[in-house]
Amino acid sequence: MIWLIFGILTAFFEAVKDVFGKQNLKKNDEYVVAWSLSFFSAIFLVPLVIFTGIPSLNLQFWLALSIGGSINAVTAVLYIKAIKLSDLSLTVPLVAVTPLFMLLTSPLIVGEYPNLFDCMGIFLIVIGSYLLNIKEKSQGYLAPFKALLYQPGPKLMLIVAFLWSITSNFDKIGVQNSSPIFWLFGLFTSMTVLLLPILLHKTPNPSRKIARNLPMLAAMGFFNALGVIFQMQALTMTLVMQVVALKRTSVLMGVVFGHFIFKEKDIQQRLLGAAIMIGGVF
Image 1 (cartoon, rainbow, N blue to C red):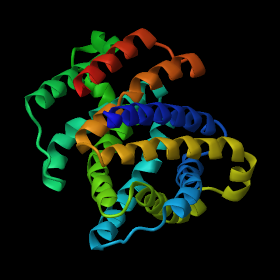
Image 2 (tube, helix red, strand yellow; image 1 turned 30 degrees about the vertical axis):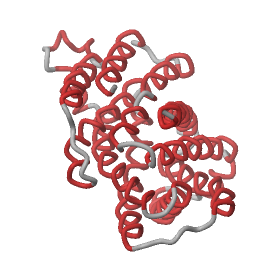
Image 3 (cartoon, rainbow, N blue to C red; image 1 turned 135 degrees about the vertical axis):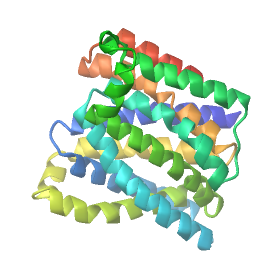
Image 4 (tube, rainbow, N blue to C red; image 1 turned 180 degrees about the vertical axis):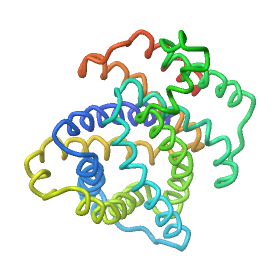
């Protein structure tokens, strides 16, 4: 059950990365943060690539990299923008619906099919998402769902959750046709290249901003690299849906971090909703 330990470590470092991402957004725009996340993640992976070597690469690897890199470049910007626009404890739990979307994408892409317990989990995820906004109940019982769709941060995060349900499957294809470390290096390098023109177009003098906040931006990339290393290792041991589901336990950590670090309110309401969502994921 080593993959279980790797999955928990993935969730922890994912939550820590989110905290650094939120802190970095206080002084930088989402384009600087998104590009820095990819760039510094790739940089921290270089020593491991040198140590493990470059595996033999085939057409499936390059196809997975082109698709995964392109979609992840888009989600990187959307994800950072989402946590910038809304509370960390409200936006981050919504990534827990990624396994719900994977009930459709995994059978199509990697041939992994859901069972009865997966369907039961979907129900709990929907209930948990409702409880995230239960304070809106006075406006009607459908108001919480409307809030998730029309508030900018949560709306963007739902889009991210869907796109990740696609890229997670291509992660497995990429890892199977190379190695966990080299796949990650290739993925973050491609994202860095694709995000660079956007960064230069959207952000005036980005190099000065990156240099000014180098320690915090580098720390964000470091913890992200740690998290995805454990994630890719776990993908070699079990099903994609199991790894991603366990990774989503980071939402509970995100709710707690959001309350104690950023003083976000409604912790009891959101923690209950996140806990039920995680119950559904399990």
